[in-house]
Amino acid sequence: MKINILKTLLLLAVTTGGLLLGGCTYMEDGESNVPWSRPAEWENRLPGLGGR
Image 1 (cartoon, rainbow, N blue to C red):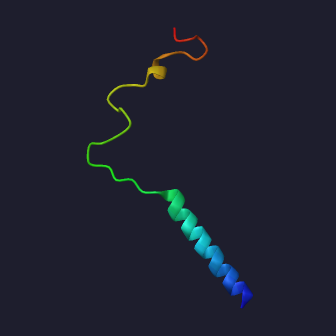
Image 2: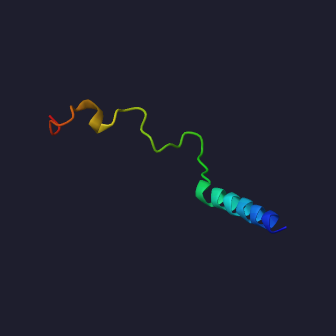
Image 3: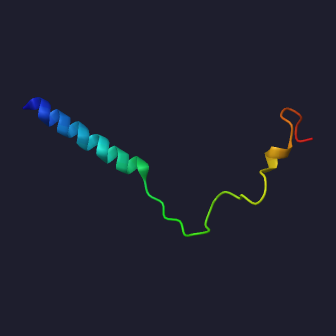
């Protein structure tokens, strides 16, 4: 009996944690945080050369 209660509490905790950490986002069509039309400023530089 005690094991069933612990399993139920563990399942409830995992489910609640998943819902809280998962969050939700609603984005309209065409909304994006990523500028796909242009490369990032770091993509055209060589590493270690200080932006030359």
